[in-house]
Every structure is written in C-alpha cells, then in structure tokens.
Length: 338
Image 1 (cartoon, rainbow, N blue to C red):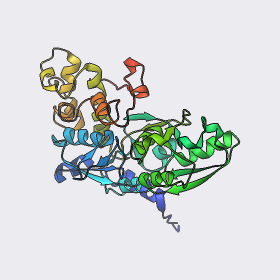
Image 2: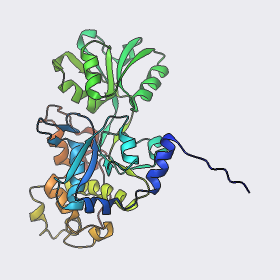
Image 3: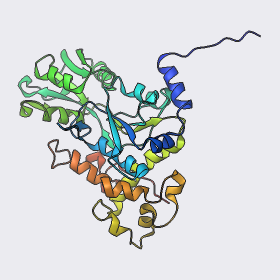
Image 4: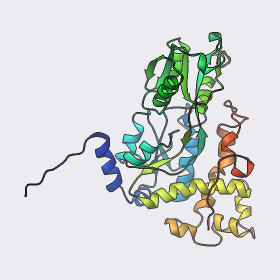
C-alpha cells in the first residue's frame, strides 16, 4: 500500500512541535539555571524595561515568581521582548519557556496552537481611547471613525464584531507595537485607539499630554489575560499554574512578602501546606517544599503584585475591580494547596 505523507505547515506545524517535542521544560530550566520568559516590547504596569534594562510589571512578576519557585531566585529570569505577532511562535519553537505578555485566553488559542493557558493574572475587557477634542461621549457615536489598532491581537476581531453588531463602519490603521499605535493616535493618524482597557490606561500614561484623551465607558469584550506554556508538558504547566495559585491563596490568607518567614510558624494547616512546613506539595510538582514560600517571599502575593504595578498608587491608578479576591466581590479565586 502506498502511503501518503502529509506535511503540516505554518501554525499547525508549530502546534504539533509544541505538543510533542518540548516535554521536560523543568529539567531544561534547571540545567540552564535561568528561566526564559516572553514579555511585551514595553507596556507600563505589565512588562517594561527601564533605562538600565530592569524589567517591571505584573507580567514580569509572574515570571519572577516562577523563577523563585523553580530556581529559588526570582532574579534568574531572561526576559525576551516580543510583539503580538511574534509571541506564539517564540513559545511554540522553544525559544522561551513561558509567555507572560498581556495575552488573552481564547478558545482558538487554547485548542489549535499547541499551547495551554495556565491561569488568569488580570481580568480585562476591550475599550476605546479617544481625544477629548473629538467631543464624543459614547462608542456608539463612532460611526465612520478611523481606529488605531495593534496587529496580531484579539482586538481586531472584537472591533469588527462590535461595529457590525451596531451597524457602524470604521477604517483600521494597523501597527505592530503598542508604542507605534500610541504614536499614530497622538499624531492624528486615527480618531480612536482600541485595546484592552488596562493597556489603554498604560498607553495614555505615556502620552505627551495624558489629560487630552479619555477612556470611553464601554467595555466590549472579555479579555482574561494570563501566562501561557506549551502543550505536552503537564509538569511545567502545573508549576506555572500553581505558582500563580499560590500567590492568590497567599493574599487570601494574609501571607505577604514581609511576613512569609514568620508565617512559617503558623499553626494554621492551610498556611503550613502553602509554605511547605507540612505536606508534600513541592514534591508533587518536582520542586523543593519551599517553592511557594520562595515565590511569595521574593515576589509577593497577588495583591502585592497588583498594587505595586497597576494599582491606585501607580500612574495607571487602576482599582482592583474584577481582579479583587472572590471574597471581596472579584473573580480572583484559587484552588487550595492540599
């Protein structure tokens, strides 16, 4: 019988590679002594380098927490800046160990790219940034507008759906990076800029005149943002997922970077399991029993990450909202370490 060889190309081929050839990420990271983490090319509050190339942001902190859990040192991270179009290929090919780059969890991305989303570190939604001089009060007044948008993002499809649903027309002005999109908006290349609302606040904070623009009230989509790993390596998937869960649980328990060492003496069984003084949660992940303690003590709990990067006291001044703990009316909820 003559066999027919089918050669997969493009995204499908990369997805096949991602799901079959990269098991053993933990061993690779340990032998290298460094975690390679994909981040944005520069988005305030999420992932951005300073003039000395020191990276900060809530996505950066997710990478640092994983490095602390795996290697015992939150500083053992190599950050790889990636555009929206580059990010999935870099992960699929093995160029990076994980992606933490304000990336939306969708059905297509979760089922056809050979990738797994390990959780949600920021619940978001798409909105619109407009110049105050335009004088519009609602997105429903934007019929015929030109829209600055970043290529390779979910915002392109959401924008098309929203305008079609409301019987409006628009023209797209597409850019590769967030900074290019902002520059196009500031220079008048478009009437409005659309992206996740968190990104809109970040973009506005970098404008020469931040007060000249306003974020519209409408939220037109669900954008759960979170870290991503390759399919086919369940151990690594569990490590990234449970590091984030440990930080969320820590906030709920009142365990912080400042008191984690003291909390090791707690008589609370849940805190003992979280911090590794009882049970074998670390062993089940292939890590030392102080994996969560290292992540929390060196990087902080979820609330600490949020507050120092995007919270009310930062230039972005974002309230917890949907990102509050479930016990405070938000969506952040983690399964127990037990």
